[in-house]
Image 1 (cartoon, rainbow, N blue to C red):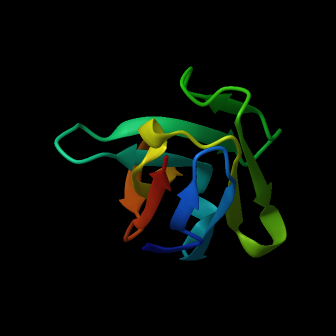
Image 2 (cartoon, rainbow, N blue to C red):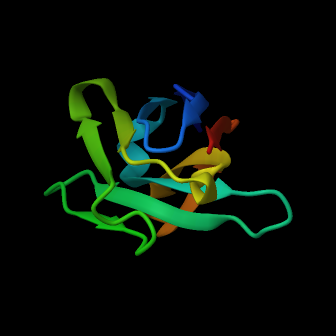
Length: 119
């Protein structure tokens, strides 16, 4: 099993920045990709960003492209999401997800961390 622990959420003014972190433990060799997803009240969970463990290629949702960056620390099995130029629409609970290389799906999720952007 894989365990994920997120940190770094909080309250920030419009245009501000926050950095979220997610540390994985357990059977981390089964992970080939880690990503961030978010869920706003009354909405479905949506993809935000992801990074592949091998090669480091990244992908972003159109809504955050150019404002968010994702990075990894392979030695620590951790991933971070740097969020800049935050907008009210970014307010959501952010979840870290680990993709299982064998299942080829995100099978493990963190507990979620609240990001609230105040205009």
